[in-house]
Amino acid sequence: QVQLKESGPGLVQPSQTLSLTCTVSGFSLTSYNVHWIRQPPGKGLEWMGRMRYNGDTSYNSPLKSRLSISRDTSKNQVFLKMNSLQTDDTGTYYCTRDVSGSGWFVYWGQGTLVTVSS
Amino acid sequence: DTVLIQSPALAVSPGERVSISCRASEGVNSYMHWYQQKPGQQPKLLIYKASNLASGVPARFSGSGSGTDFTLTIDPVEADDTATYFCQQSWNDPRTFGGGTKLELK
Image (cartoon, rainbow over all chains, first blue to last red; front, side, top):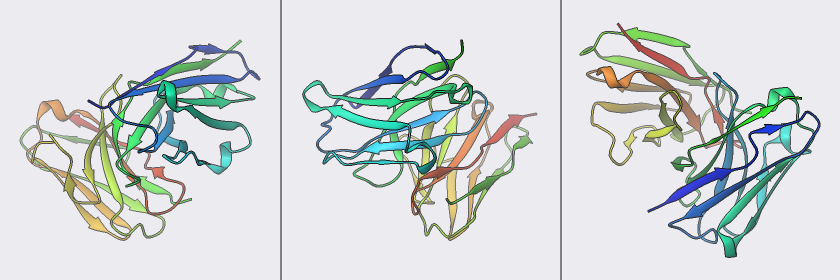
C-alpha cells in the first residue's frame, strides 16, 4: 500500500538550515508527484512545493528563495531543504502524494514536528 | 494567490445536519477539496472536486458548489466528527487551503 514517512531533526536553531526526508513505498517517484505541506501549531495548512514525477520542481513564491526540493529515486526518497529558518517556521511538516497531478492529496505522511528555537 | 475563507468554528448536536462553507477569492471551477483533521493526526481527504466522496468516507459527508462558493455537509453529525475541516483548491497556482472550521459537538 502507499505510504509516506517524514524524518528529520525535531529542533533547529534560528538561521540554520532544515533538512527533511520523505521516504515513500508502494509507488514510484517517477510516476507520481510528491508535495511538502506544513502547518504551524494550531493553524492552517500551507503548500510549500512539489517534486514532479519527471523531476521538475515548483515552489510557493514566499518560500522560493529559501526552499529546495530534490529526490533520490533509487532510495525512494524526496528531500526538503530550507535555509534561514526563523521561529515562525515552527510547525508540522507533511509530505503528501496527489493522484496523477489531480490537485488533491489522498496520501499523507504522519508529519514531523520541527521546532525552531535556540 | 487564491484566498479561501471559512468560518472559524461551529457547534452542533449529534444527529443534526451541519453545513461548512468555503468561499474563494476567485473562481476555482470545481477544483475544491475537503479534508478532516483530528488533533495530532494528518489531514484526511473527504471530498474531491467539489462533490466526489473519497474512498472509505461515509455517505454522511457530501459536498457541493462551483466557482467561488462551496459547502461541505455532514448529515447526520456523529460524535466522532469532532475535528477541524479544511477546504483546498487546486485550480489556481499555488494550491491554497482555507483557515479551517473547527466543528464541536454540543
